Image (cartoon, rainbow, N blue to C red; front, side, top):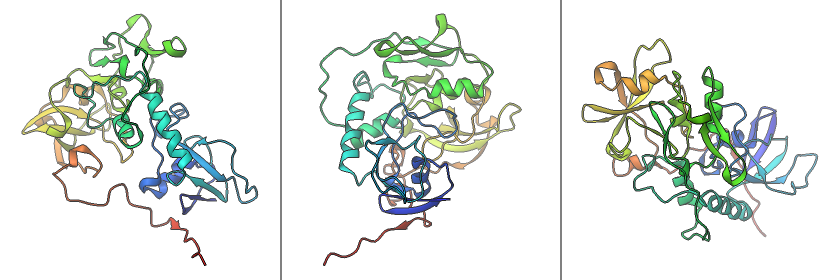
Length: 324
């Protein structure tokens, strides 16, 4: 076991735990944001750099700080390590620059994007972004293409987080899409516009942190804040059958996988559940989905509570000595 202190909170975790996972065990506002890391996907992380933190003390034996900011999603903790996230002005300033970089080619089409209201990049830019852009050059432009019978790709919005590539690699029989070309010309696409049509292809929509991959059966039908997310399940021979149905009255507009507080899928669902079961008779409705206070869906609909997740009671807050 190793003891790590993050923004004044100390917790004991297993050896090999990353700084990010240790912060998630504590919870609250000290958890670094992520755009590419996905705990369910092997090899994810280390690409978007939004989770950079400052290691003020490397370990109990080595009290020197690390010379540069490190990616919390790929840096394991050491016993006695001291980490600064929101308490470090350097981290906050760097995160602001990273958000500005991510928005260089991202179009301002939130008013028409289906991801609006549940977009990680939208939340990140609202919290850490700036209200002006210094980028005067033209943005990259790509044609909108269909990469399957159910998925539409808006490459203009893509931030190259690789989540969809890892998802297709690890939960499907074969991956036929990936990152083509290099540098500023890099893009997510299929080889000679092949079609993605395996049983779990729809999960690339759920893992995408922006509106680059969208559900063709739901496009432009409604905004998420007009719908009521309900936990539901069905007997499915292909997947767990546990999902969230988004309803307006008695109509199901879309079906998604269940996600945790970090917007990560709990159980991947098949295309049959996602795209073909849009009748209430197909599902056993369990009840309303618990919505986080930070979600736009909760505005004016839920009781007020403390913003952010609750601090883990196991974590202890270090009390600074009173100044004489």
